[in-house]
Amino acid sequence: MARIEAWNSSSVTTFVLLGFADHPELQAFLFVTFLGIYLVTLVWNLVLVFLIGGDIRLHTPMYFFLSNLSFIDICYSSTVAPKMLTDFFQEQKTISFLGCAAQFFFFVGMGITECFLLTAMAYDRYAAISRPLLYSTIMSQGLCRRMVAGAYVGGFLSSLIQASSLFTLHFCGPNVIDHFFCDLPPILALSCSDTFLSHVMNCLVVVTVGGTSFLILLISYSYIVSAVLKICSLEGRWKAFNTCASHLMVVALLFGSALFIYLRPSSSYSLSRDKLVSVLYSLVIPMLNPLIYSLRNKEIKDALWKVMKRKVLS
Image (cartoon, rainbow, N blue to C red; front, top):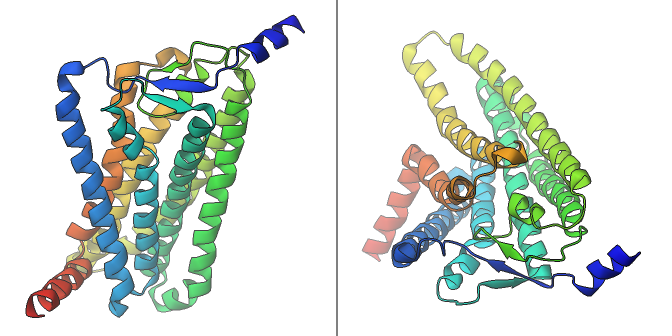
């Protein structure tokens, strides 16, 4: 009882985010770099959303999923980047307990939603390559909307489980987070109570989400590879593979970096290394996704060129 009262009387109400304060000589360079990355993320993803929405030729399941991926990337990056950028000019880089919990909830929710959406996109590629004659029947508008809605529901339910198990722990000090946003490993390290249950819940969510997504991805691409190998012409095989290459690149980047952070023993936790990996999956990948899809996609480039010509002629 005395221990509980001590926790209650000294509970943490704010956290301090150290960010990149350990490199004062790089502050200006890092601010310009991260601002540039965030602006490119916003511009390219917004361009994709408006291009897909405004061109009837792009009103297909693949581009419907891609426009939702761009929207998620904007939200995902925006949960971290604005706060991180403003903190470069703050002496006290504080965030309230509730603000930290909200940032964590939305960041993880958007991240897991993206995992589910990429899984749905793999099923879409399977239907397009393995069942081309039935593609429009299989990937109906209603099914696509239900898959996207399911991705959001699954993502934020998983995030709620993780956030609840984390922020119901006791935090009695210190309150300094050696990170640039409220992420799971550095927050867990500050808890005064037993974190075993939180670790278990985190592992269950990661294994369930990652395992389910990986299984569907594996099955989808097994059928895709089988269908591609049955194509007689080399040109046909290359065209079929090219439609999946962008998706595979995005999946490898996101799943690889996320599993590295969230599914490993706490004994291997390294602050400097993990900050770099966190920059990759929270800032760089949302910037790369639209570039990977648009630069390799003739229909997107044609739609962009059409808009640019219309603007010039008007």
